[in-house]
Image 1 (spheres, helix red, strand yellow):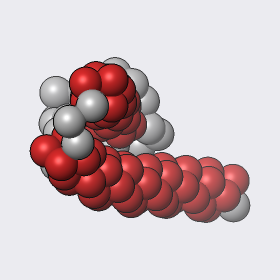
Image 2 (cartoon, one colour):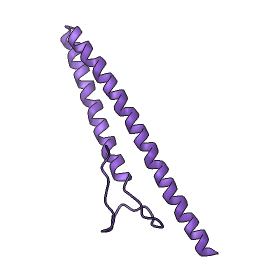
Image 3 (cartoon, one colour):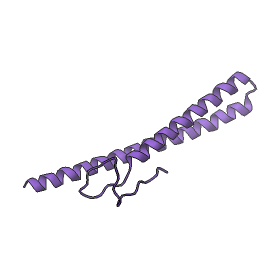
Image 4 (tube, helix red, strand yellow):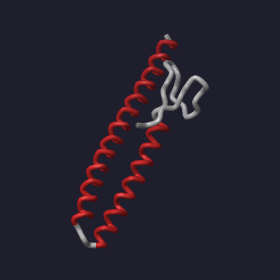
Length: 103
């Protein structure tokens, strides 16, 4: 009986981790899409505007957004390593696990 409860709890943890990773990937994709849209609009503004102050501000913002996106991708890649059935999610990977990069 305790063994079944333990297996059920482990499966719940695996499912929770999978749901968390899926949610983080979805959020990262939304951020990436938004960043791409902002970049496109910002580049249009740069090309159509001749104000050097606006140019500088837009370029600084694009740089910050790209850095933040990079940090989020790295964080998601760290969190989204594959899980073995019945194994708890751990930051240390054993020799049978391979860390998947975020794409």
